[in-house]
Amino acid sequence: MKRFFLHLSLSLLLFGGLWFGLSQINWIGILGLDVLTQKTEQKLEDLLWDAIQDSEEICSDTEANEALQSMWTRICEANQLDSSSVKVHLVNNDEINAFALPGGHILIHSGLVQTLESPEELAGVLGHEVAHVQLNHISKKLAKEVGVSILLSAAGGGSAAGEAIKEILSQLSSSAYDRSLEKEADLKSVKYLKNAGINPSSMVGVMEKLESEVQSDLPSWLGSHPDLSERKEYLKKATENIELTEKPLLDSTAWEGLQTACD
Image 1 (tube, rainbow, N blue to C red):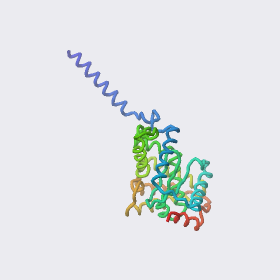
Image 2 (tube, rainbow, N blue to C red):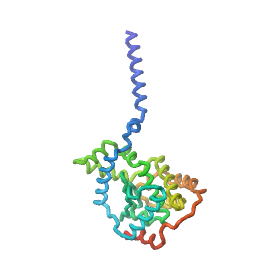
Image 3 (cartoon, rainbow, N blue to C red):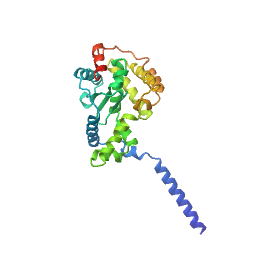
Image 4 (cartoon, rainbow, N blue to C red):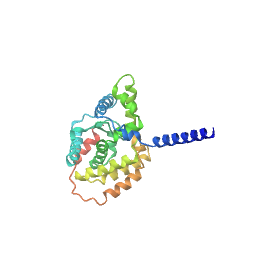
């Protein structure tokens, strides 16, 4: 009998140890479940974009959109990025916000553009968002925070898709990425701007403005992003010794038109 209980105890310990060890393995990462398939991502992009068009007013000002597109093209051409793979939109929304959808739509709220002081600062935001797209951060964020089953449910359509789409949009527009992903996107944006002849220290100015807004009433994801002062400090270090020949981005008339396009 003692031998039986000894074997039983050893078996339980072995099973418990094996279970604990397996539970520590990142199966989602190993099996690739944190990355959506291209087909699923495209379906999600279409559904999310339809929902955005139903709920938001996309600015139709031709000159403002041309100015925004010229900035976008400049960044893409300097970094060998396909400018047609990502579409940038100006949204008539007072909220100080910007975010990207899976697949490649970047939404810039007019409230953010009006808060910034220069096209170079806006270029920093654009660089940051396209970095999230290029580094595949969006599907990783959604798989972690929303769940693969909900993403598949949304992409598959049906009665549950509507609520799933609302949840996905809420996560994209109102919550931050992990600190490591934010830092990776920030530093990638620094490279994008440097290559395009845009002073990347403008990103420090963006952080300073957002810090001041946090002290008042900053809504949405910007207020919950990883510590802004921390981001400002590593951006200062990353940009302090950069030497480049700056090229004008937008003239004052085009920038003012972009800032007031949705008034």
